[in-house]
Amino acid sequence: MSIPAEAQLRQRLAELARSYRFSMAREVAATIAHQINSPLGAVLTNVETLQALLQGPAPDLAELRAIAADIQSDSHRAAGVVRHLLNLLERSKVELEVIDLSSPVRDAVDFYATLAASTPLHVSSSIAPEPLPVKGNAVLLQHVMINLLANAMEAMSGLPRDQRRLEIATARVENSADVLVADTGPGIPSDKLDEVFMPFFSTKEQAMGLGLSIVQSIVEAHDGKVWAENRRGGGAAFRITLPLAQG
Ligand code: ADP
Image (cartoon, rainbow, N blue to C red; front, side, top):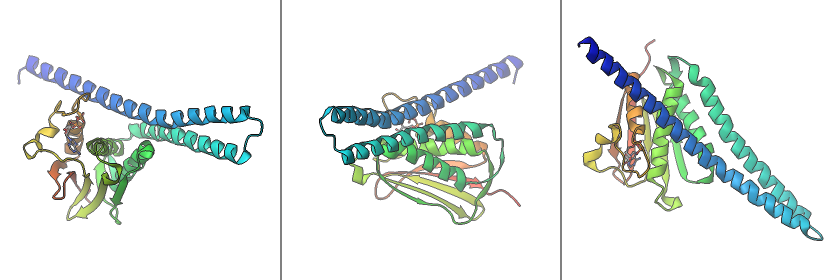
């Protein structure tokens, strides 16, 4: 490759990396803003109710206590979202190391559960009982999971709540550590199963279509593979397989 061509490629890669980071930050910020707004809205409504009750001649103490308890738990919920984010950022300096693949999966599921506390849905997670040592970066692997979980939740957003089911599993299969994230959404048209990983492919109105291409880049940087399937009973499944660390 000639020097100008290489310089051009480097510049394009740098631009791509910048837009990846921008889109991740934007998506995380939008999710956080949305999820903090919900407990804050509940706190505000409860405070307004408290104020109205306190205007009355003989406020019912039991009712006041119940409202105060609600305010406390919603405030904890909002604080939990912030705490999880800070934990995630603090750990972002970690380099490659041997980690148990189930641990970033579990962290991302917990993180998402905090964010999604206002959206009850059925989650079944089956985490491998034995450690799944892989050489990797826990924060990047968490990003992979958060992207897959966000997509699964979005895919199911049109369904009645009792039909939204999220399945997460990790397992050791021969010399690999495997992860499954499956949902009960509409699935992916069979001719788009590969295309969904292309940068800027999106069927959503206000999305950049970078999530799955980031997922694929991170998984491939860990010498792994990621692919999408449709489930027999309906819904999409994303599978990741990473080589187990030697020794
Ligand atoms: P974005 O979410 O910004 O559109 P992604 O790269 O994460 O970008 O996803 C690309 C496209 O893949 C989505 O717009 C959607 O059409 C499809 N997709 C991803 N995950 C799912 C899923 N769980 N079920 C159905 N379609 C999906």
